[in-house]
Length: 253
Image (cartoon, rainbow, N blue to C red; front, side):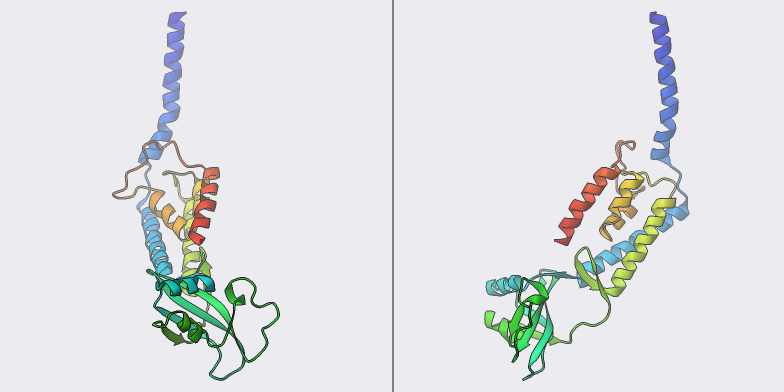
C-alpha cells in the first residue's frame, strides 16, 4: 500500500506540474511583440499628457460659500470674474468666478442681479442658483479689501468634465480617444496579465485618464517597476469594480 500510495502521489505531482508550468511561464515570460509594447507605451505617454493637462488647466467646481471663506481667511488674493452685466445695466447674468487653490483651479457660478426682481427658483442651494445683487467683483472686494479682481470675458467654446473637473473640449476628446484605444488593446492583447485580470482592468480603465494610465503602465513589464511576486494571484473583476467606485468618488470630490 505504501508503494502504491507513493507512486500515485508522484504521478499526481508530475501531472500537476505539467498543467501549472505553462500557465506560470506564460505569466512570467510571455513573449509580447515589440508592436504591442510600442502601442502600449505610446498610449501611456498620451494618457500622461492628458492627465497633466487636466490638472493644470482643469477647473474643479466649488461653491460661493467656500470662496467667501477662503477670502475671509486670506488664502485667496486674486479672483478672475467672467461675464456679468455692463455698467449701469439692469437684469440678470451668469457670472463665473475662478481662483487658485494651491496649484489647482477652482470655479463657481453665480447669478448677478441688478435693478430687477430675483427670478423664481433662483437662490436655492449652491452653484449657479446663488444670487448676488450688484457687481460680483465689488461684492468680493468687500470681503477682502486687498483682493485683486481681474475681469475677463465669459468663457466660450466646447468644454467637458473628466472626473468632476471642467476641462477644455480637446482634453475630453483626447481622453476619449486614448480610452477607446486602450480598451481595444485590452480586448485584443494576447495577455494583459500583470497584476489584474482582463475584467479587472476593464473596470479600472473606466477611471479616465487615471485608470487608463495605470493599465498602460502596469499591465505589462515596466522598467524600474518590479513584477508581481506571485503572477498567478491577480486582482479580480469584482474587487476592481469596488475599487473603481471608491477611487472615482475620491477623485471627483
